[in-house]
Every structure is written in C-alpha cells, then in structure tokens.
Image (tube, rainbow, N blue to C red; front, side, top):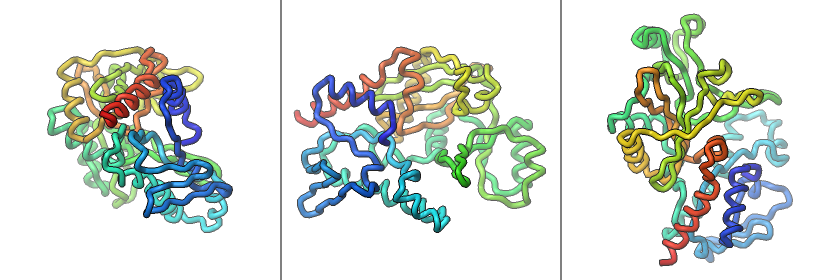
Length: 321
C-alpha cells in the first residue's frame, strides 16, 4: 500500500544500508495516468517511469497488496453496484504479484503461497502440535448453534472464518470484529444461516502479539482486558486511551511449538495472536502472515523496521553467494 507507514520506515533503513529497492503499490497499477506493460518475452515490467527486469530481482517482501477501492478508476464502476465485480477486480489486481514467482531464484520474506493460509488450517496445524486452541465450531443452523453454546457453558464468541476485510455500506466502512455470543443473539437468528465460526470465550489475563521473523520471536503483552472497548478484540482500538503494551518473553517450550507451527505453514514472518488465560495456559488464535508489527515495535523498543531491513539485506547476500 502507498500509505503504509511501517513500510516507509523499513525503506528508510534500506536507504541507510544503501540497498537498491523498488516499491510497487497496488495503486500504481490502476492509476489513469500510469503506464503498465509487461512483456512475457523479455520479462520486463514497465510501471510508469519504472522499468523492472524480473531477472534482476533477487529479494521480495510482500507487505500488503490491495485497498484500491477509493481510486477514481474504481469509483466510476460503482454505478454497477456490484460487490462481485469489485471482488473480481481485487483478485485480478492482487494476482499481479504472481509475476515475481516466475523467477524461481527469488528469496522471499512472506511467500505469496503462504500468505493465503486459512485460519482453519492454522488452527488444525496448531492442534496437531498440541498447542492449546479455543474449542471451535462451524455451524449453519440454530439447533446446532444452541448445542455448541451449551457445550461452551454459554461463554462463546463469534468471528470471521477467514479474512477480516472492511465492509462498505454507502459511505461508511464496517470492520467485522470478534464479539460475544449471547442467547438473545441466537434467538434472533433464522433456523438456517451462512456457516459461521463459533469459539470458546477464553477468560484472559492479557493478550500477546508475537511478531515472528526468520526464526526469532518479538513478543508483547497487550492489556486489552482493562478497557471495555478492546476487551473482546483489541483491534477495536481506543485511540484516546491506548492499551498498555510491554515486552514479554514466552516460555521456551511454548515458543518452540509456535516456531514449529510457522515452519509447518511455510511462514518466515507473521504476527501471532495469543491469549494468556487466567488459568495460565497460552491459547493460539491466528496468524496474520502480512505481519502487523508497528503496534509493538516502538512501545517495546524492538526496532522491527530495522530488523526487517536487515533480514532483506541478509537474503540478498545469501542470493549472491
């Protein structure tokens, strides 16, 4: 994205290390005044004034790639009022990054194949590694939902099965957040509904955001439970009264299991969401392969922007050996 501040700071370090780089934003591909052409014959991509020879690319970091909805080119299509059209366009533009897969020698920080791993696969792989996960159900009817709710002692949450993407209605965007499930909500539902993910509600001592980079963890405790607004989902940020965030060291045996999980999912970077429960257990929730790290980097003095730049530098040196 062209407005991602964390990417800006990583690039500052690339400049400091005198490393050549090219930044390609999804928005670069859909501007009225921006030329785009790729020749399969000679593997050269022309984006505006940038000319990229694929064979010259040695290291690629995928950060975020999308968020083109507010561009004039796309707004002019809103007269069709078609969600499916917008999703189709998103898929078409996001597929651009697959061009870089044509160079088999490229070193990756966050491989395109790994970035699309599903939440259900994450949970399944974690379960198979004996990592604690909340009791989880997917249901599409009120009868089975009531049964699951009772098994969870009426302490449950519901959340997205896959990605959390903003939902735009008119000029307002809504972000699907984790929310508590109640008997009142269940009673308001129809007999049959779309498949939905229901999970055990873990009573937390605090949350942990663990950023993983090339085998190393940088973990922080997030005291989201102390604020009513962020208690169920710290992504519902309270900008007036931010959560307290401090460095945290996971127990070695827990960290080792999470390391195995990242290896099984073929992820060399990503942010893990974990709950430290009041009973002392560590519950795995999910991984963001794109790796949100800004919220813990500065509060914990991790300087992750520099460490990512060093990771890219090391991969470049490995390529050239």
